[in-house]
Length: 65
View (cartoon, rainbow, N blue to C red):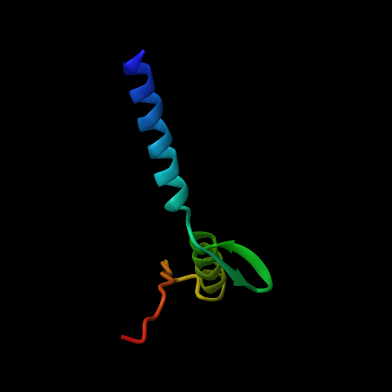
């Protein structure tokens, strides 16, 4: 019984950890989406206008430090 409780406790802690790692949401073109989705959309738009390029876009948060 103690082993089952330990496994349940570990699984619960893991799920809480995953929830805390949820990808940040931003607003892009008046739509709420994950950062990776916004990066993909921006790269796709740039590639349409520049078909000879294969672009990768990265969004990061600026700090005032």
